[in-house]
Amino acid sequence: MTNSERSTCLVVGGGPAGMVLGLLMARAGIDVTVLEKHADFLRDFRGDTVHASTLTLLDELGLGERFAAVPQRRLEQVTVQLDAGTAQVADMRRLPGAHPHIALVPQWDFLDMLADAASEEPTFTLRRDAEVVDLLRDGARVVGVRYVDRTDGSEHELRADLTVACDGRGSAVRAAAGLRPRSFGVPMDVWWFRLPRRADDPVGGVGRFSTGHLCVMIDRGDYWQCGYLIRKGGDTALRAAGIGELRRRFAGLLPWMADRTGALESWDDVKLLDVRLERLRRWDLDGLLLIGDAAHAMSPVGGVGINLAVADAVATARLLAPALRSGGIVPRSVLRRVQRRRWLPTALVQGAQRIAHRVVLGPTVATAADSPAPAPPVGLGDDGLAPAPLASLPLPLRLAQRLPVLQGIPARLVAIGPLPEHAPDWARRAAQPSATPASSGRWSDDAVGSTAQSTIRPRPST
Image (cartoon, rainbow, N blue to C red):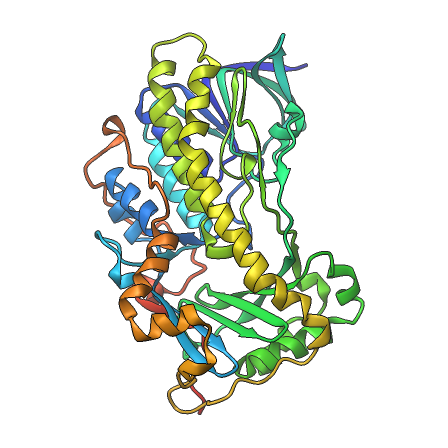
């Protein structure tokens, strides 16, 4: 027997976009239900960057103090490590406003904080273990979804005046609607894995560029979340070489991590991120809107996907809440305002990512087969890598070293981005402090409020 339910606004997906949208709609007094496929938010290898534009939004929503209580790292500078030495790329301290940094926060803590804030609104409902399996239609109009409760297998129908898909790049709603995004070719995939982190390791972020090799690491307190770029579609062939090949490559790139690569016992410890760069031509159908990665899957370049999705959610709430509050069906002409508002910043960011793929990442992974042994970095000393000679740097990096003020440009593009969105007046609240940190306990206590440089350089040698 199918159980039937109803909500004014139905949000599919409890990621950053879905939770922000649910919170804002509830603060507008709209009956909103968020369906989350999983029982909790504790899933590894999700984006952890909360950029300055989103931090400002949290302040406007009165959640700044709550967020500050969440264990986090702060990135203030970005430095790239090359074989010849280091070069600083971006300086977040040049950003305007109260947040001249990027926060690294476990996404489960961020989502728990948003869920707690939304649960304080009487019109908000979060259903976990709710897997959407189909759309409900009345003729050509989408009028809700059919979902399965994964705890007992029961089937439910949830009808709504508006359904918003925030269920990511593998969107079940998008598939059920028969929508196909335009795909832009990408040159790489990413292997994600964990390695132990020690107290005297660099904090914040670590990355490394060499001929044919590129890796990044995210500081999660007691372990590193590591990403190693491989050629697109090369996963199967590379795995055939054995886990020892990954250990060797990683140790060659970052010698100070060599004694920890044994933590990778088998390929079961390595997850593949199938990188996509996609965008729907039309983000809506009658009764349905798609935002975030469901509408435009982003490359991991810049780590900006979360913040674009959150901006989509803010624009959606601001543009659609008045129509939902007045009752009745939201016409497609109103739904299309969201895409008109958010298309340009999305296209600009994706355009920048495509350039990065073509100019930097593509050539790097394309030469990986010809450079099986990463070159060990040079210039190691008590202070880490020495600055790279200016003559060895590409022109943009050379200019950034000579004129440090230019480092504020990439900082602003990444941390704020084009067209940041602000909370509507009706959603704003005074600061709401949290009695206890919303931490899962997976980060060390000394991470709270810490400031870190994104050192794309190794630990000083001893």
